[in-house]
Length: 255
Length: 381
Image (cartoon, chains in turn orange, red):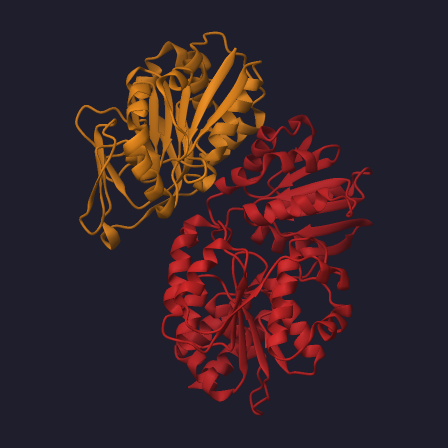
């Protein structure tokens, strides 16, 4: 069995150790005897639907402003339709921080400039400049019940209902009505420090502000993405003594 | 007012020394700045001296120490912030505590390592003769932000002057922006390894630090041979390859505080010239380290795996479990890892481990200070 992961813009969007998410998915797949292939999708990569049809999981992270600018043009002109198709056809994806914002409807800067997003997620992000502080710190949240509704999640989840991480974002994200969040904040800011939501759960993708990287101390999320991507109902438990201990210890960290 | 601030700083320092408070090295500066915010400006007016600033993500302490050492051996009177306290308060502390009360000392040089963000503040008050820009790489994103932002601030700080000699890495592509906008003299150094052979420095990554120091000393007319001569008795800065014997074991500390210094040190260990049978990793998440530890996933996993292969592996620190998980995901066999949050416990365990004789310690910043304190019984700061 093979797991094909498309890692979008590893050269430009690689801040905060988010690369770790891809390494962790590959590691956990290999431990189950699954061959993990990582396809790096860069500015020069020409995608077509036959390549994308083999992709099980798309990952994209955040980057410095300069990196995001380079990516923005390329994604809008050359990759947008493939990403949309991937998400809408119920395939698995993980989008962190800058990428999460980019999949929304728009991003409004502090100076009022509006950058159009890919419009895959029904949400928008606004940066209030110096009027509101940057959202930085350790996070703890409860995974949204929409995951619990999925028998596959219940099957792979040996961790519990929580998810831990670290957030560092200036923009604040607001979900439009009827949109399901990824999680509900116990400690931290989450989407906007107002409504208690964190990230988005749309079809089989997750958008989130959580770094850490997200999958490092949340093995249940990692296994869910793998199991969902390959429709695996028989997934071997791994020795997660350290990751589970790290998860538990993380819950006690101060924001 | 200057004298009151100076007096308070000196009193604070005496209290710290008397009570062995150690980590209070920035207090005297903090107190002095609080009672007299203009103290740096006043210091500058009182002492005519040449300032040399060294900034960048990695290599500041070593480069500053190399320059100070050479200048000192050339019979110049040099003061520096050798404790490594490189924020404004720490710099004020160093300047005040090294100057005498009654007699105005002749000062030839102030060699100061300066934090990347503090540099912007410091340049508003003091215009150095030489500014060394070593490198910029990802470090403590929760505190510094992205490197593009720091670079823009640096360029902005240099906008209104032409009289600083800027010495910088010719191989760092980001620095092109500095040479584009800065109108004064710029000198470059590179990573050529040959000069290292004339010194006792270990690690190829020290080539740039050494070449930067040679370039700076060259600007003051000190040729390479005289520099190498001066460096014949140079000893590394604390925590930068420093060796400490403890309970019959040899510990060698390599500060590993961000992905690039971590990778550099792993590469050094894997080069095979330094023998080690045990690896001790210490990861803390204090504010001064950066609370966000996700950077450990930007460390090259294959280097981590190779460096741990066939060695005893110990892990300590407030985020020990996260480091263990990271090792695990790099392919290190988790059953062989011994870990505890308490550094003391792990060092004890390490000391009673008969197979552990040479221990390479890779700590991040506060962990390095803690390790050093534990092994030497003394504090640096």
